[in-house]
Image 1 (tube, rainbow, N blue to C red):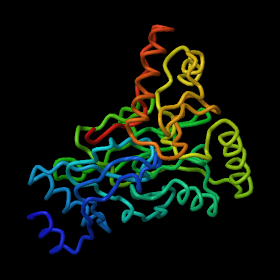
Image 2: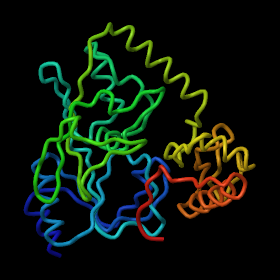
Image 3: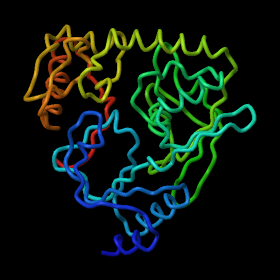
Length: 296
């Protein structure tokens, strides 16, 4: 196949028919036709140009959180961003590539006494996904510390400053088909002990309220006004309800957890049940926060 020849010529590692359950925090998902592992921005851009030129569908993959892959898998190429893993200080700014894990980013910051991202502690995401989702917790969001993003779109790289971007609840407006390659953050100096203490407090709160012992994708639904999704799902009598190996967590009803052996359809069934029950009881339509991709 043309794609295989291109990848071999460029020295880009790839596998075929890779179960995506290995790479998602839900631990469910069917196979991807191709799983590609570019090791640099340059090789990523070459792959993207090729895929778009050949009209091959592709899915960028960071930490695999906030993602539900259907049981039929993904027809096309999944692009692992794990190779884009550099973090560097440029004057007063911190630049991190899209594949850098949030845990590594926080370690880098705390070791150097850089404060501002502590609210992300415990989020199983990468920089790219956190930016695209405008990840937030404890009253803070990515947009509060973001200086700018380097974005690939239609064969071109473009840098967007913070003021050029439009953020909203759990999202960022970018042209369709865009991919965040790196992000630049403006942080502020703080004693390392204070940064670590703040992260410990935030993580303790997260551990107390969220079901971290089982695979999940994080919050399943966005929080509608005036009540949080977890409150509505619990009030609708669904807390602890299960389908197959999937369950609305008894700790936080806006988390669906994989108690063992769940498939994507189990999770989708629970999501549809929540939408139906909450709308019937309260007249509120729940909107997914988790991204759903692939074939049934």
